[in-house]
Amino acid sequence: MRATRTFSALALTAASALALAGCATSSASSSSSEGGATPAGDAVQVVASTNVYGQIVQQLGGDAVEVTSIVTSSAQDPHSYEPSAQDTLAISDAELIVENGGGYDSFIDALIESSGSEAHVITAVEYSHDYPGGEEHSDEAHSEEAAADADEAAVAEEDHAHEEGEAHAEGEEHTHDEGDGHAHEGDEHGHAHIEGFNEHVWYDPHTIVHVAEAITDELTDLRPDDAEAFAANLESFAADIEDLESSLEDIAADQPGAQVFVTEPVPVYLAAAAGLENVTPDAFSEAVEEGQDVAPATLLESLALLGADDVRVVITNTQTGGAETEQVIGEAETLGIPVIAFSETLPEGETYISWMQANITALSDALAE
Image 1 (tube, rainbow, N blue to C red):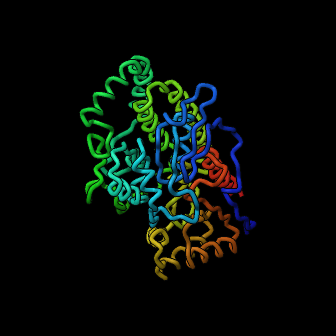
Image 2: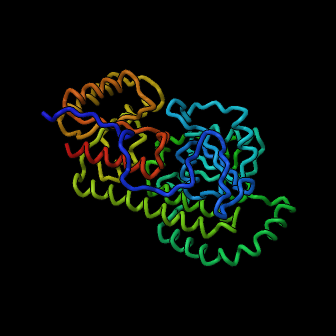
Image 3: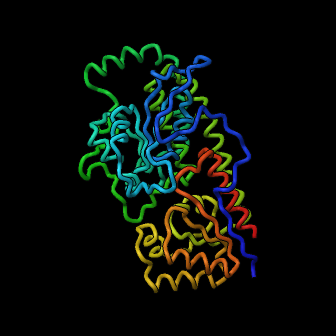
């Protein structure tokens, strides 16, 4: 029998150090003006639905952005979050809004409508390769676009202020419902939960690099004087993503097709990128995600899967659970199957990169048992 061992991915830290201007917080923090950095009053006002996206924006924007992340704690559930008056104010002042979409953080849509915000909205799920009806984001296309943006940045800087002034005079600001495919009224915005689609796309590094490119494009449009710094930050971030993907490829090479049981869909993208097979009954993970009881037959099926001695790791979500999840964890520990826990929000003191690397390391260590 395998020795019982429970891992916590949140207790691990990544080996690589990242140069950051600061971490996203639940309230806007002033940007430093030292060393020629953008004065705080000129910083791009950005609102992110969670601190996961807030930290990514902060890393990409550095001192040129002032970020407000709304959901920052594991005690807050984005699915059911109730916005405050402070959140409405933050949205109304935002120049750029970054959300997950797919029904995960629909409170953002309500805030946009109630505040009348005309900020541009970046919706992360739309950059996922399997988002229904989503835009294709090929690596080649993004590489060509990034190269073109870099070549044009210097030329665009001189003319941008004049063009932006004319656009604002004519009421053609960056809006969330004009020309960007983000209508936020009724059912048109497309952010309701989509049956069969896993909206937890931040656990897919390949999707996140495309989200980072979109964020960089918008920041460059808003503050063209900082285009060179944004491009350098994106290059560094993309290199870190490549390292994450390399670590996932190592797992796929060492443990091809290893079976995992996930109590809730959050880590599915990461497991798939590692070449692992998710054998969890859909009815189990869907019930846990929706906060419903797991049907007795589904629970028995799940426990039988663990007893068949093919499941190598059980992965839980620290922010969801219930009696049935506890039964699965208890059975896994009895059988000596490693159990690791992933979270939905960024742990304090972590960056997106260090957090994902910690999760990958925990997964690799558990599979090695």
